[in-house]
Length: 92
Image (cartoon, rainbow, N blue to C red; front, side, top):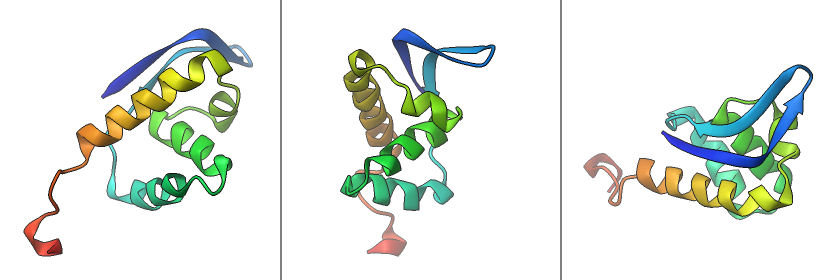
């Protein structure tokens, strides 16, 4: 699990989010990863961050520009760590 501490916490109602903890990637996340990987639509990236951090989409949409690069780097590192270097034999 990858954790990114936000320099500017995000308040949604009474809940304050001071960090994003990306959960393990599941098979159902693959479509979201493919859509966000194209970056054709930044909304896909916002949805992916919210999905993998298990936070409301409003949290991902309100990430401060100062936190954007650390969050994206954390997300990349998380995906890299969860993705096998070579595909399983069944996929060759």
